[in-house]
Length: 92
Image 1 (cartoon, rainbow, N blue to C red):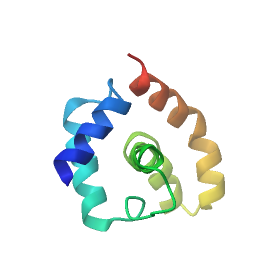
Image 2 (tube, rainbow, N blue to C red; image 1 turned 120 degrees about the horizontal axis):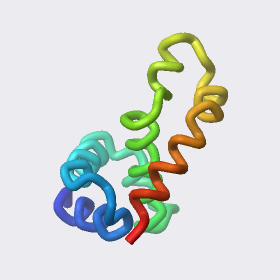
Image 3 (cartoon, rainbow, N blue to C red; image 1 turned 30 degrees about the horizontal axis):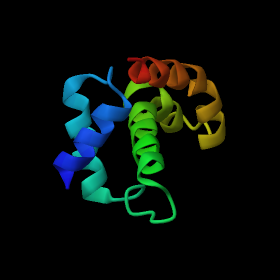
Image 4 (cartoon, rainbow, N blue to C red; image 1 turned 45 degrees about the vertical axis):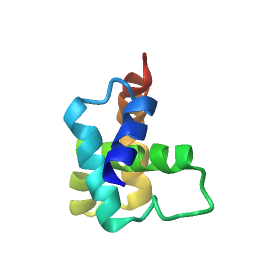
């Protein structure tokens, strides 16, 4: 299952650093949060998993949360960086 998810991630996000697709797939497979939401299409599940990964690993989101910033405010503060990174990863 992890290999299939990793392949789907690479197809949707061709500029994602190569090692990240497997790391994302392993994380999603382990905790299953987004991946097991059957109401979402597989494409949407992949998008949400990569977005969450990006938020936590490529922005200051977690740092802001640890400093007492609300999740809503932390998302606002990191949105521009998140969007820019995801757009780059999606380019072919």
